[in-house]
Amino acid sequence: MRMVFMGTPEFAAKSLELLHASRHEIVAVVTAVDKPRGRGRKISPSAVKQTADDLNLPVLQPANLKQPEFITKLKSFEPDINVVVAFRILPEAVYNLPRLGSINLHASLLPKYRGAAPINWALINGETKTGVTTFRLDKKVDTGEILFQREVEIAPEDNFGSLHDKLMVRGAELLLETLDALDHGRLEPSRQNDSEASPAPKLTSRTGLINWQEPAVKLNNLIRGLAPYPGAYSFWEQKKIIILKAAVIGSDRVEKPGTITKSSSNEGITIACGHNSLFIESLKPQGKKVISSAEFVRGYHVKAGNKFDS
Image (cartoon, rainbow, N blue to C red; front, side, top):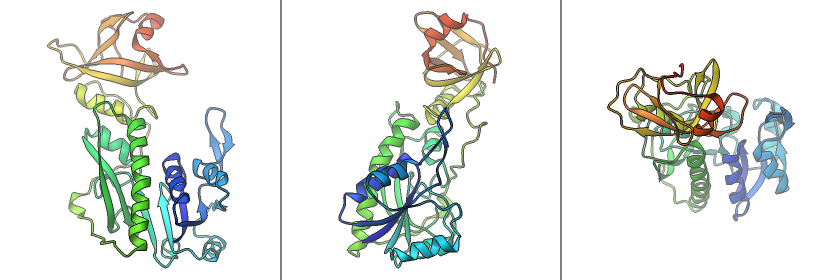
């Protein structure tokens, strides 16, 4: 089957690698324009472009997906299908262009977690399972007919980084399964039940702000859902502190939320929450490297009774 692959981040690059190694033919790759990345803000290609270049695949980087020149170029490749992973919203002229239309890989069990950040929100909301879905693209985002789904368990120690990698691998495998089934006429699409839908909106800078009034379990889920990036955070002496790993500690003590109830130069800190407490395992002070909370105590002279601010 001749396909145009569309995607941008590492999550999509894994699928590109697997599909390239399959019997299907990738005739072109569409990805985002090069942009500033990393600390030095150096102009760099996307993960998908880097992978496509390594595989000697033709790459298109349109600034506007509705440009007639871009659509004409797509037609010239005569694709059977578009395969979309972690990319932009496609105009109808693009997703309907191939004879078999377009399919998308999404990192949730649709219709749950429709939107830009399904992996983050599954963790933030304390889910114990999620998964990957392949579906047909249509006019509304993440609402098309479901082709295949596979569940993935969320382990208690999973954070965004580890769950992302699990779903990246399973998603690439599911995408190949879907294309093979489509090629052999074995697909039985099913409509999504909109009444079961839940949102996974784009993360904002406010998403990660810790409100210590919340229960420790909820805050731990927030930390897991945003680690290692972009990070859940609070403020210590007016400086931003990103908390990367924590553990829920049962507590009978009644302390004002945000108060450090235990401070040890050997063990680290425990912080009171709206219910129970959080033992902080690792954190990142503003402009500094990741450290343990014991190192934080030693370097910042933290004492029990001091307080974090929301």
